[in-house]
Image (cartoon, rainbow, N blue to C red; front, side, top):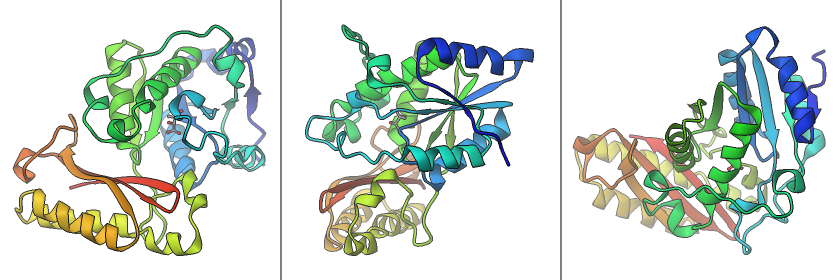
Length: 283
Ligand code: PAF
């Protein structure tokens, strides 16, 4: 049976645990999470284990990336199940700070993001989001000083924003993207899938289906407009309100006309009932 990971809840305990892990110069990978772990997170941990000798997973529901109207209060918190999963995966250390440890009284700084964070995708609908993500990830990187950090491709714009920030601020952390894990019917795994009613859950794979159809048409040489419009129609007919369905350059996330402007990424965000889902695929 794998032994339980060390758990640190304040900075001195984290430093002590990391000093121990780093003995004999072992490489360290960080997997930042907000808990409510599913098989997608497990695949990040497994990639981290393949790439580094020691694996640290942070569990912290970060209030600064939620708007007051969003689900910070109700975001699923499943500590016992998360601990069991991370123990089974042989994780070395869990960094689980309290909000007051991460943001002590008087905390007054924030990382301002540009470039991939201001391309009119998630930033258009969640203007607070990337400032909050960059600030907490910047803190996680300086607190844990990992050699590398693993992020899911499911939050593709987030992956681009964090990679840009790590490079711009010379944080010395290699940011690695990990492939999206899907349910059998194509729905991308997400901690927010638990919010879906049975009927919404049945409708949800339409996002992946519409992206795949669009990718096929783009590969056949069509320009982006018509396939995107059909995809929005299909997704809307399935009961979603679409925030965006866009084909973008996979590196810069800037708008494109056709496959000739590649490499391309199709990105979607849409709401069904009260649940907002995002997903993306490569073309
Ligand atoms: O993707 C997430 O779970 C969060 O945005 C992250 C990267 C852990 C920052 O809070």
